[in-house]
Length: 247
Image (cartoon, rainbow, N blue to C red; front, side, top):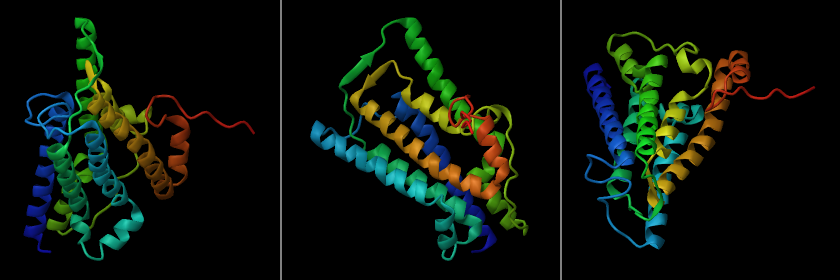
């Protein structure tokens, strides 16, 4: 792939990510977007909506996790240039999220509703704090490496790719995956929880917990003892270190 084409592809993939992230905020928060978790999408009976929504979540979750595994990357880069491997991952994830947003079946049966103004304000504060934590966490490690632009830039400038050094800035000192913590806060903090929103939040929480087990194994294999020591010092999603086993 030519350098100009790789650059254009990387930038387009990054823009697709930005669009999907911004839409996700409105989708989960149920505002400013034509189709959200609770409104605007195709209406279906409960017996149809639940399996369709689970299928959409699965269509995103499986490729998103599998494509991140080292064994898949080794095979995938036989066909996709390594310089745009990450951009392809980002673009695929963004398109699958777009499909989910487009075809999501709202289930507007209310599970809980907060009327108290202070409670509603608190839910809103947690929601925005979650998204802020997501964004900040990406920049604390390397935002542009995470979303493929650094790989493309190095390719365009003729320099070899070097992995990001292991570091624990800011919230990473206390939580190993603050980005995922931010997602969970944003997904669950709502003054009105519907069955559809609960299905989305519960399913994505289960996916995050499962996916992190694979991610942790890969990180331990790549960083070795330094990551194992880190696991003893910082919690996975909450700032509570793992309890040490007694000998």
